[in-house]
Length: 376
Ligand code: ATP
Image 1 (cartoon, protein in one colour):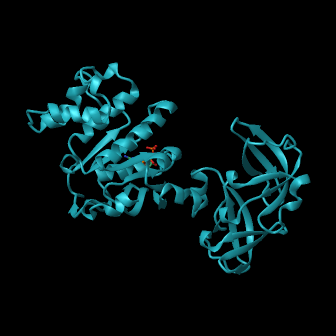
Image 2 (tube, protein in one colour; image 1 turned 45 degrees about the horizontal axis):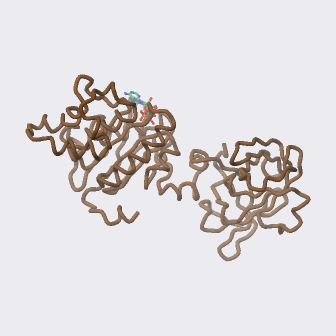
Image 3 (spheres, helix red, strand yellow; image 1 turned 45 degrees about the vertical axis):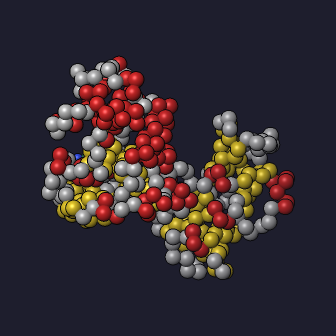
């Protein structure tokens, strides 16, 4: 984003060959990663993929087996957590139950021996919109409010980097959504680098400007949320961020910047730039398309749709109405359970299980992956 490119490069968090092993088990394989100063960065992955371990190595709570952690031009690998210009917010908030909200936030300043803390604490409480709650105890606040106290308490020390370890994990869905926007607002306002660990893809996509998708101790792909969603380079990323249909295909030819694929007797087309697999004629490619990119037309009305441009015939196997959209499963010669999400504007009542249909989509919405991967 413009904010990260403008930022001072001396504040970047840089991991170089950082790795963590526990005996014979490798939790994090040697990893190189740069988090630009001022960015909202998410480490996203399923339980056990190594994201918390990576975060803890940045915090200094876990000693790396190899590699270095630097902050700007300072190598902090050997520094204990409290000497790093970094603060962590945990899922469990870890507020002091006997202190009121003001004193919880003031804690870091008082520990450093500061006497006049009032102005700073009040500003910080305003930032997290808890100005009215200063004299309450933590147990008198909601989960979301307690979470904001934890953020204020961490930010008052002006860390260069704020680490957030599943900070919204304990909140219900509605509150989580509110807090996602709230944390995003706070980050934009203070401009401090946030590194956020989560297993929730929607959360990472909503909040972060850069997401690193982790799988089995490695970063599988790194990019802006839209880029990861539109151009996944592996089936893991395609499946982890949303749903995807995959068609096993053979490269027929290349013309200009388009690749033509053969699948199930028909042809598919995709832009060359969206194919991350080597596409030599006769080679195999896994073509992917997101369920919401597909149009579904009853076969009786499909005469106008040109043959040979991402047009597939099939039969509806199942449909579920979910209000704003209907999710269809379609059996076709190229993919046995094609998923299609259709918005319910002008819903066609003939689109019921058993109906013959034609699926079609814009070639620009197709991506090509290395076919040696497992589509599941
Ligand atoms: P979660 O969301 O469940 O916390 P995670 O992606 O954050 O998952 P980590 O906590 O980083 O995963 O753990 C990565 C792997 O390392 C896991 O398989 C975990 O069992 C293992 N692991 C973590 N800490 C230790 C330890 N102290 N000793 C042995 N194995 C560990």
